[in-house]
Image 1: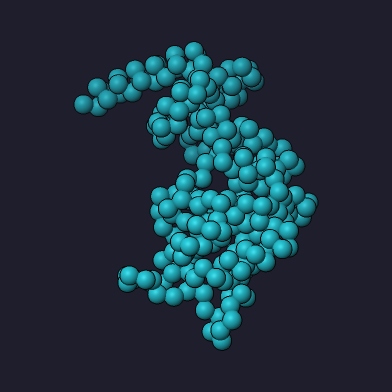
Image 2: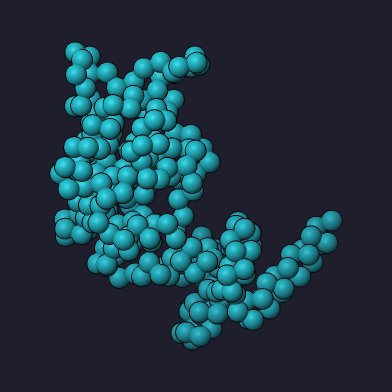
Length: 255
C-alpha cells in the first residue's frame, strides 16, 4: 500500500518508517511512504505557504496553491487514489474506517495541516475526506497522519507476526480486556486464577466478561452500538445484568 504525505515537516515521518511494527512492514515492502513538502511548490524567494486570513483573526492559513500543486505532482507520480486531510473538524477516524482503508489498498494521500487551518477552497476541490483523530487540537496534522498510517499498516496481511488484528479492541465491537504476563505474583498482586487454569472455554468466557466490563466503564456508547448491531449474545446480556447488579450493590455499600 502506498502513502503520500503532504507536510512541511517530512523528517517527522522517520518515526514510523524506522521503528516497531510499521518499520518491519515497511522493510517487507507491505507499504511505502513518499513525503511532499508544499514549500517545494512555491515560486517566491521566501517559499511562502501561508498568509493572513480574510476577515481578520489570529494566526495564518495554509495557502491553496502550494498544496494543490503538491497533490497534482503526487498524482502524476501514481499516488493519491484518495486524498485525506487531517484536521480537528473532520469526521472521526474509527476502527471500521481504518479497516476500509486497508481493504481498499491502493494509495492514500494525507494532507497535514498547520497554523490555523487550510484554505477551504483547497479542501473543497482537492480533498476527498477530512478526518480527525480526536476532539482536540494539535500543532499540525503530522502526528494524526502517523496515527492513521500506523493503524492501517497493522491491518495489512503479514504486518503482525503472531497476533490477529481481529482480536484487538474495537474489532469485536468492544474494548479489549486486561492482559497479564510473568511473574505470577507482582508486588503482591496475583494473576487471575482462571488464566492459570488451562481451561480454554473458561478463559475465553472470562476475557469476554472483562471486555464487557471495560466497555461498560469506559465506552458505554460502544456497548449501545454493539447491542444495536446484534453483536451481543444472550450470555453477554446476562453478564451485563450481573455487572449492573454488582455495581448497584457496591454503590449502596459506599453510601
